[in-house]
Length: 357
Image (tube, rainbow, N blue to C red):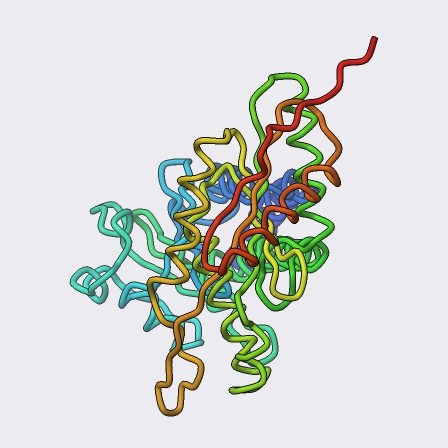
């Protein structure tokens, strides 16, 4: 009789496992084709409960300079990008081992996600996901009313590992694509747009100006006496100066405008919309952000020098040729150089597209 009861119990358990596996494979099939992390998290928030006693969960994945945090409760998921971890998550990352926490063990801990404090949550199961020696994520699952049994934990491990791996791979693939795009469009030293990309942005805005009539302005800026910096303090100091000048110019560029490294110590700003009066204000803003604050050229002894830039600008209305604008701005820049440097000069006329017919 006992063996018959045991056999029936094993049969029921096998049936439960089959039902759970079917629900898990259905969920895997739904999210496998997706690349949108928020969409994937939302589906998991709604359907994980069908093959394990997981009614809410909390996932943390480390990024380069922040952490992706997903909180799921009541069938919905919220995705955040946080600069630092709360004490609870920090401790779990350090432990690197699966852990089970009864309610009385975690209720008073600092930084515990709010949805785990719900009175219906009786137990937490914490699963760090490891790749070689690196923790790529920690997922915490909450059980409602009944604690997790061994079958629940097995399904949490299987699906939780796959789920975290999937999101981590999406994030890494996006990072690699972003890196490739940045290398293709940005200057390696200054991280500004490279010459080809900034001219491409100029072409796009000139085409737009041809349709709207809104003015486009370019400013060419050149560092005054840059060779002296390299000759006196070396090329590493020169590189530091280029990076710092780039950062300052970018900080004083409007969100709708573009800035790139045009040549060795030349920078090109493309402003839209910006007319011949507005560019005077913009150019002065750029000039002063460089000249007003000295640059540290030797970090060891704190040596600093005042550095200036000269600027030349040209404004166009309509789809004029980019090379014509750049020549006018370059001529204005050399006028600024001849007149004593550390100043901005605008081209004498506004360029206009020649209407055909």
